[in-house]
Image 1 (cartoon, one colour):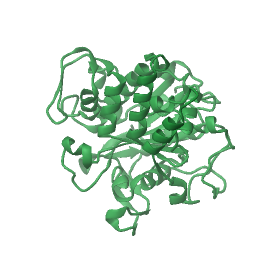
Image 2 (image 1 turned 180 degrees about the vertical axis):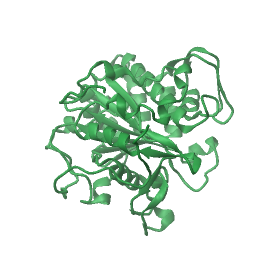
Image 3 (image 1 turned 90 degrees about the vertical axis):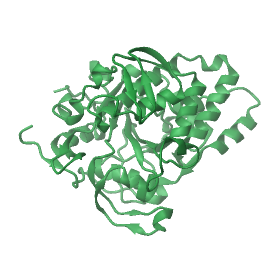
Image 4 (image 1 turned 30 degrees about the horizontal axis):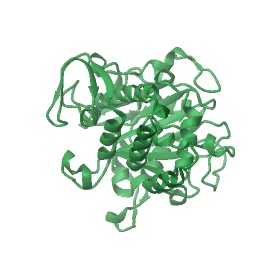
Length: 396
């Protein structure tokens, strides 16, 4: 990778133009167009409305959803919006060990963002890109207002692991850090925790996946033989958390397992006849809305419903999976640093509503794992269709 620079403390350039004071992104949209389907974690809950006497359902399910006013927390110092109709959502999986999550490990210093994905939906809402950010990426974390453990004080900017942003400042700091890295404004925020994720998969009836090799990871309590399995909630959680039982044991391999599972989950949701069973539909909606925390512009059943209806045509083959281009930190093999010239290609593609070019990830450490021999890693899908946005870019 001659000529590439590596960095952990230089933010990607933001869009040209002024900073808009309003928290809203891009041209004014209807309620249904503002709503975006994020993976499949919220699809079931989003599809709940229908019928003539569901006032109670609305009331109960709305009460399930936790909302955070990200716009108020971050103010005007954010990347500029552009009126092209595409949307960007930060999806986090929290590794909090509090409450029902305690059985998954000790709570060592508070919750962190164990999984982080930027979901980009194109202008036509028929294709999507997912960019996974390794939790161990060294970044220049911006100054953030601390959470309760920091007693609300401002935590100064510093070089730190990416997942520390959530730990010190919660969702708002995580969004601010992603926007600082990418120059891409996040329209929405969605978070799911371990316990909620497991229950959602069980309510869905499991997810079918094929493993080409056996997986045995005592840390994540996952043991699978090679073959096709219908994974229940606990097994699914074990799969998306496992790393010691596959590949080189790094977080980069785990990310590819998560991406493969996400595609299988989307296929599973699309194959379930939700409207043929009102009870199953309600159970899924109840579970899904209880499992997520959203930004305040998505914290109602009506808005989540619009999200699903608007994007129900997106299938797993319409989604391109990418891991942020990184290299192992020469000073600490347990950390990774961004390959600056390549990460900018990734973020530029999202800013211009274009597919991420293959050259952006070629030679990245995330491209060198052997997870493709364990499961189908799902990174190639949308590449067959060059127009993932409004413009075209060849996969150079």
